[in-house]
Image 1: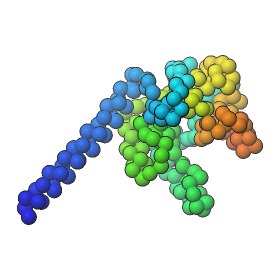
Image 2: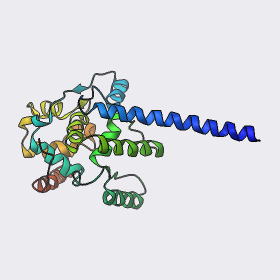
Image 3: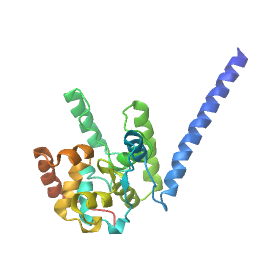
Image 4: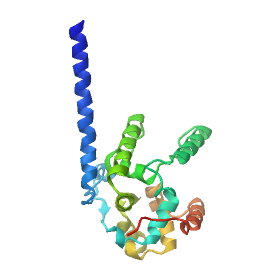
Length: 228
């Protein structure tokens, strides 16, 4: 009996060590992102595997991204970005209430940092274990990186249309110009694409997205952004 107990504890210790090593791998990757931009992400690899196409991905430095884009994205996705530590509990409670009311997932309540965690390392699938890992990575991102670096990476790696990753590729695809030259209207329009980028890339603007665009533009003047 004592031998079985000792074996059980050794197994628990072994699996605990594996989990620690696994999480340290994420932490080390995030640490590197202080100085090096991601070459690809989990979502980019998933797109390449599904379509056999190479994603359009162009990295551009934070100072070369229009401030209008930064304001529009924060206004659309995470108005409390500069003030929270990775989680907006008010938005999460509201999202949970909406989901219960609708009987399905219609709202996520995720912050920019949570979205970045998912895009960089995780799959698009929904599961409790993926959500737990997303939360752990979110804490790591907020602890290791500055808000400016988190936003810079986010704007450069999220999908803006089918196979279009990063704000520079999006600016060229939709407006044939650089991310540094995007206007307030163009930035707000692109921000409406973030929740369902492939859908908007196919069908363009809808009545719903135009309403959202107006809301985003109304919020932008009140949004603060990380300094260059």
